[in-house]
Image (cartoon, rainbow, N blue to C red; front, side):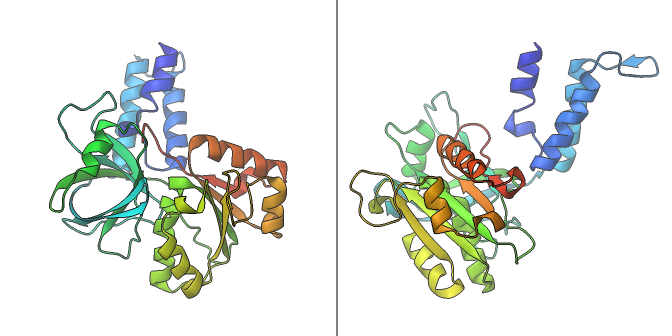
Length: 299
């Protein structure tokens, strides 16, 4: 029962607070109420009451807004990656790099259901809302329906969350480490900086199998021209031409000589994120200087 309580109920995305700091408070609060003999007068807390109290706290600090989006167009980024551009029914206030829950009802949904969590791949200063998605074979029923959407079709977003966002201090030196579709949070941050005409000391290292897998190529080239973004590509396929080679500790240190002065943002498949985090720790990067993207549930 305790395992189900801690591993399932407390980690349900629909009832979790939106940021890491609030989730820490959430877990500590419920953990305290879960302790034996915690009581107020003659009233003793039970696990059920502790969870209820925690969910009331999560509700109070979470976004409650739901927004209907209408598909405007779909753009192919690579052979298996698409960008979907939506028109919101009203403006959405968010920070570049945050994610939302996307709900797309469809018939014959598989066991993964009709909702997913995806990063907003757009600038908060843009009117459109953008979603970048990679399609694996066989695709889930959600992604099959997403791919068959036509202009004018709608879906709903809600539960704005996430603290994988740009630091408020524009002087901080950054490295963006992206793998594959993990480029999407940076596809929101980069146009935001372009829109603001804000130059920051940022190096983007984008890891893919081959050059054909590079998404948002035009955006990256624009950012190099207009805000001085430094872009390095890494290709892992044997014989892949160009780039700095498959990433390891020595290549990162060589590509970013002042790496000890920088904060690293890592986004991509779970295995890649874990691997890059281990590499960075091995070359002396403190945990406090490593931020990783967070996608609750299935994507």
